[in-house]
Amino acid sequence: MNDKFFELPLEKQEKIINAGFRVFSQNSYKKSPMSEIADAAGISKSLLFHYFHNKKELYLFLWDKCATITIETLMKSGCYFQADFFDSMYKGMKAKANIIRQYPDLGRFVMKAYYEKDPEVFSEIQASIAKHGAFKANAKLLNLDPEQFIPGLDIEMMYQDMYWASEGYLWNKVQGDNIDVDAMEQEFTKLIDFWKSIYLRKGESYGSN
Amino acid sequence: MNDKFFELPLEKQEKIINAGFRVFSQNSYKKSPMSEIADAAGISKSLLFHYFHNKKELYLFLWDKCATITIETLMKSGCYFQADFFDSMYKGMKAKANIIRQYPDLGRFVMKAYYEKDPEVFSEIQASIAKHGAFKANAKLLNLDPEQFIPGLDIEMMYQDMYWASEGYLWNKVQGDNIDVDAMEQEFTKLIDFWKSIYLRKGESYGSN
DNA sequence: ATAAGAATTAACCGAACCGGTCAAGGAGGC
DNA sequence: GCCTCCTTGACCGGTTCGGTTAATTCTTAT
Image (cartoon, rainbow over all chains, first blue to last red; front, side, top):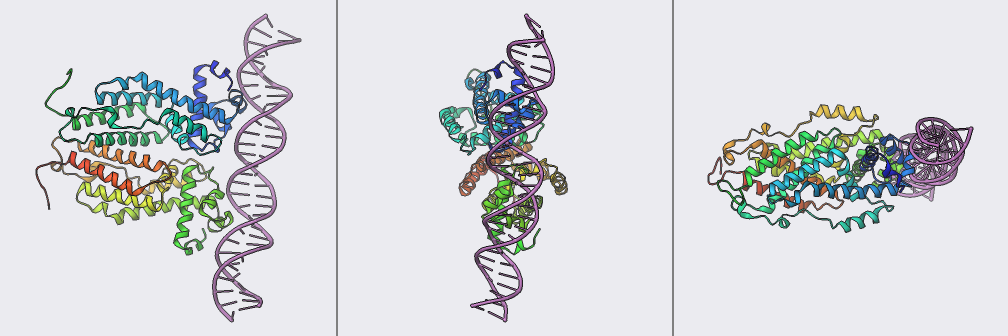
């Protein structure tokens, strides 16, 4: 790709990136026209081809960009370094909300790319997925202390429930075009508080509290 | 449309319908080629045009078919006539599983059509949506008895949690190509049982039990 | 066997689309 | 004016698409 792209004002770079996310997330790779991306970015098709020599290059660049953005944002959010389970969940949610704010279609783009089968990009995407290790969500990893929760609670099921509810909530909200991320954040916070009130053991105190 | 379509063996009708669901759910209306649908159905494009005079007709037929299938299946499942909340949930889940078994791409087709913006079909779809009344999921409608659940439970939040978890679970599972509906049913049953164990008031008995 | 009729398809058509190129327009600095 | 760089309209060859038509195959009644 043409390094001149990175000398563009960040705002313009993001506009092009978001245009790519949008178009590639709405159509398959083959049926995502460069012209449509250029239009969405507010530039001419020729200029888009000036920055990215061909479609495949743009596509793979966007894919890499996704990983960078996601990892960076999640790291910066501190959700991995949180002792309290619900705090970590809360921080993670905040991070995701920030991603949506800046790159509204990133999530859907990742999903589409993940299942993309076009031979022109399939092997590259698959290789990249394998490299990143496909870290599955899993309660066992978290090493949660059963003492913290109500007696007899199936912690793994609790985590499943929370994980799926998050996914379901996000999917439903993001589906439309105008996403009110602030409202989303607020609603989701309420949901986390609800879980806390249900799952957390009451009447005692632990650790530093 | 050509009424001869309905004289086809049901198996063949379903194959064409599912081919339509599949292609229209994977691409936008405009970028869903009739030829691709014909191929997926195992017939020639000409024959497809013989049954449906043009693309729009096929599309709107499929949309109507969705409503018919969904309403019919849910009614037949008895999930609306169940006194117990979790039983009703269970029956509803079973019904959805059956729909997925018979029409794997119906759900995704509905979603796509719901947000389709192509002027060739937009007004028709919107009118149909308005007519069906867009029944939103809402705990208040169910008129649940608070006595049945653990004290102090925010029933509406409980319902939200369950609703979103269902959505999230379905979306994640249905995303891939090979759906193991049986495993899904089983896993989901476990989730419902988990909810029962968490939310239901214990140590007492009610009603007919 | 065969003719009539129905089911199904290959071949085709004009229009639009798509990835990619290229030569030229336009703005700023000297 | 002239050089440089960003940006674009116009274009090209190839492909795709919705839809039509005429022909081919299959069925069936006689």
